Each structure stands twice: as structure tokens, then as C-alpha cells.
Image 1 (tube, rainbow, N blue to C red):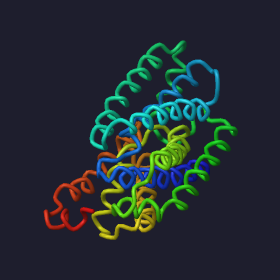
Image 2 (cartoon, rainbow, N blue to C red):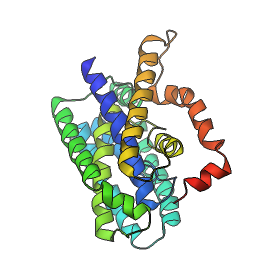
Image 3 (cartoon, helix red, strand yellow):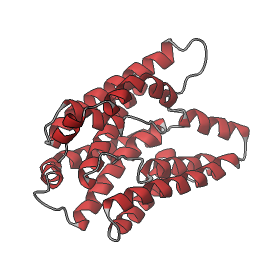
Length: 271
């Protein structure tokens, strides 16, 4: 129970912080840790690790996400932001398709069930080892430390006061990758909080200082994820409720807030 709550906390911080960094790095509200295929790559690595047994969940996720990050970095050298996000969505679909092939060819039904329970993101830590936990905590620490140390630079970049060079963008992508992997490799894919929560944070706080959005996004991410976890555990009406699907339902009113924002508010929050 305590370990599950620890990863509710880690996921509630890692994914929104990674998401808001993506939005600041690309100066685009569609920036998301999943939009460049990082989440799909983490799932592919976990699937390959589960089905083959060649490594642990976290190591498999880390390797695949690192490869995906490097591909996205080299693409950034050739295209603009809008094209990059389009590429990321298509690339993520490609990676997701590879994951589907791996999973549907599971050697045994038990492995297929194990992967599904992991992918349901219910914080049951299916197939997770102590080594996975240690590695994920290291990744989380590295990613969070990088986010805090680069906060001022990202804020100035978002305001268009400076332009982060390609090498700096590569390092930031690697740091974001650490945050994504620390959560997804243990808990499975968790939607909404890496895209919706950062946008909500920017809606309720007009400040462009990313450090404020780290705090607001983390608080909202942990809160929403904790509520979802408690509903799944104790108000499930006797059926199995995956966290991601349940969160999408609970977050519907929050999503509505993003889209009913007035044009004046939109203009006010535009860098």
C-alpha cells in the first residue's frame, strides 16, 4: 500500500513536470511527454522485457525511451516545432504498433495478463522488482533535479528572451525522458496529467515562471491521481477499473475548463 502511494506521488509529479517542460521547450500548449512518442517507447520496452525476460521492466523502458529520445532530437535539427509534434504523434503511433505486435505474440497467457495488469496503471506493481524500484527512483531524482536547475533558462526561453541551443534541448529531452521512464516503467501509461494538468496550471496562473507551474501542476497531478487511485481501490462497484480510464472520466470537468476559456484569457496567457 505504501509503495503504491509512493508511485502515485512520483507519477503525479513526474508526468506534469515533464509535460510543462515540453510546453515551455517547444513554446506550444500541445507539448506532452507522450506527444513525441516517449510514453509509447516506455511501454514498448516494458512489453519486450515482460515477454522475453531479457531484462527488467525499468531497464527495458529506459533503453527504448532513450532510443526514441535520440530519434526525436535528431528530428528537431531538421524541422520546426509544429512539424516536430506532428512527427512525434506519428512516431508514437508507429512505436505503439510495435508494442501491440509484441504483446499479441505473448508466449504465454500469464505473461499477457501480467503485461495487461501493468498497463492498466493501477499501481499494483505487477512484475516489478526491487531493482526496478531503485532504478526508477534514481531516474526520478535525476529528472527532477534537472528540471529545477534548468527552470530559469526554460522560463527565459519560453518568453523568447533567449533561444536554447540544440545541445541544450537534447539534455532537456534526456531529463524529461528520465521523469517519464521513472513513472511509466513502474506504473504503466497514465494519460491526461502530462498534457491537461500543465494546461490547467497555465489557465489558473498567468505567470510565465515555470517554477510556479512545477508546484501547481505537481499539486494538481498528485491530487487527481490520488483521488482516482482511491476510487479505483474503494469505489469500484465490484468491477476492475483501470486508473487511466477512470481518470479520463473524472477529469472530464477539468478538460471542459480548458476549452471554455475565453478568448481574452487565451490572449493573456499567450507568450
